[in-house]
Image 1: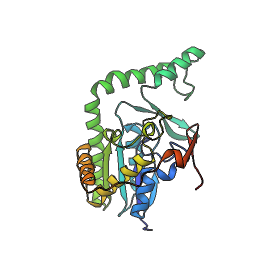
Image 2: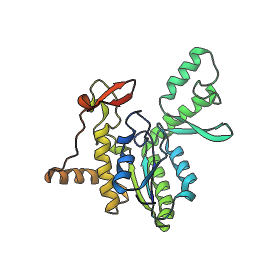
Image 3: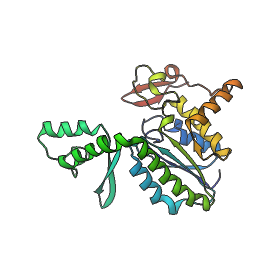
Length: 253
């Protein structure tokens, strides 16, 4: 194995612990194995671009020549509120689901969120309002802003001999998701087969020196594979896995 590393930044579509039992099937693990490099997966489920960019900046000094950096641009209407835990600055990720947190706090008579006691109801409502009435209403602008920010950081990385790959949330619907793999599991994240195909696409981009994995490029790539009759080794759910509370266990052969 090479001493170089694959750095993966993103949200739950990159996170290797989003669904226990499937860690080895997520695309960074597959891609790292294919490229024969160590994988550093920094992704966090529900992460925002505020959080993702901060993580990338934090790790810049650790990324070395010959490494590969991938960033998945998540949906822009999210926000990461800085908090302090055990002396470290961490973050609580907000999106439209913060409505549920606010409602739960109000019904319980608390003036803070259960998920983050440092966030008052007043702050939570202000953040939700910012997400829904500012970022959501200007999502294309924020999407472009976040993308350009990452590309700016990529310029520094490329000067240091580091390969980069950018992809975004528009690819979320382009690969098989859990509800297509297991009809009893209504979830829109990628299944092991979705991750397998995504890893193949990202491998193609990296080995061809492509720095932006767009949805239009993906469609052309898929069309070529269909013409050439290239398929992934499909992993069937019913004969390979059992699922309890989002924990997957591979069945014995």
